[in-house]
Image: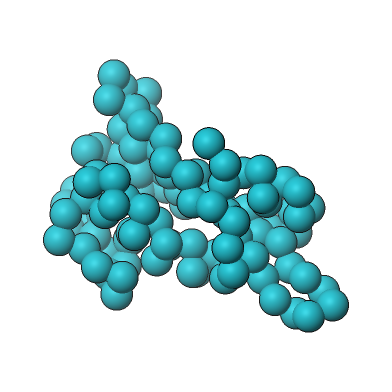
Length: 102
């Protein structure tokens, strides 16, 4: 794997003060082996999304030897993987829910 692009959207429930996130992970962008993985809508913020991305990538067997305590940034640095993180906050609830669905 040469690249990981993590794009997350967040929504904040103003009534209860909770944040929710969903995301898409694109690996090997622009190559024949390009693959898109989805992180479903869940509780947390943009920092939580990086930890969730580790779980999704591990489950899809895209990365090895990383656990929940591993930083995605550090993992990419150690394995010479180009990592790009995009974050859109203040999104509508319906947009955040739809973003994490394949």
